Length: 138
Image (cartoon, rainbow, N blue to C red):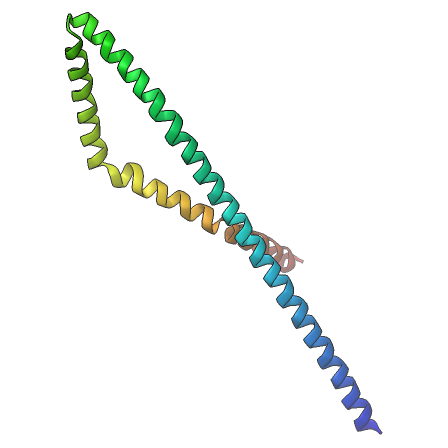
């Protein structure tokens, strides 16, 4: 009789543990889905912003450059001098950017992408660390 009661209690405890494990797995699965959705949304918004910038800034750059070239050409008496001076200036800027491309472009872009991808994980780590500190202080 005693063994049967203990077996029933163990069976109930085991069923409760299995139920809690299933709940934990479901919650973890939902958390991973939410994390993935957040990362996709962040990357999508970054790509959309980049697309808008790739459309707007070249247009502004082109028309400003044309204006400066024509202005320099009118100051120097020949339009082609304005375009040559501006072209030489852009060539020098292009060489400088090429030489400093890792520091100016590659590393900041990589850092930004990694920050977006691992942001959610850092938020979870911070929350967990705060909870653990509160528990240890009590």
